[in-house]
Length: 112
Length: 108
Image (cartoon, rainbow over all chains, first blue to last red; front, side):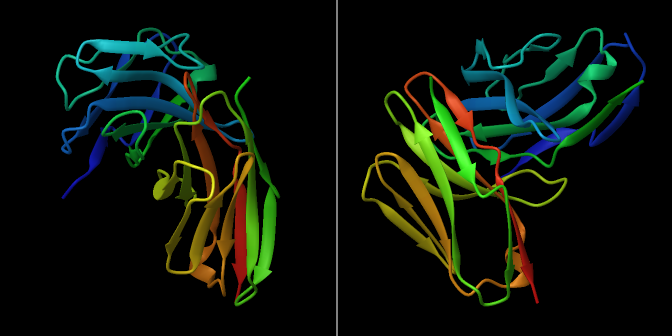
């Protein structure tokens, strides 16, 4: 089944404790992206990747890191999480940036 | 600046009552306009892509249309299961821009 998977789905952590949210797709897509969604602010792009080893900042990259070493994986790293990074996070992939995106199920992160 | 504005913010209809959702946009070099449906707490689900003015796409009770300044998502004889937030997204020459969404509720 074609899909985007994210892990973990739920995470509660404390300020400053490094964490990684994994994202994987099995559709051989070149384009992958991370978003956060907050009430009243809609979906905002954090980082995106047009292909392996190519990543670029979205609208809200501060406090996040990404890497794209393989085509199928695009992990999101929070080196020192803070409470303002409490949010619902979505990973997505598409053939390229001009095509529709397929979203993962979401990761609900709480930083206390 | 590339921009997307969706209206109304929220819409409540009775089952069977047809209506339209609007997505107005300004963009330098439209590469694609996308409609997604999102249920609470879940990832957006792709509905349609429109690439050029005059284009129309249909799927079940939904029909999307595109002009040079706006897109409409027409919903015909909606059912309660059509209740969701509908997102309009544009891919410009440089940037991807999300609308804030229209929260649609269909009452039985």
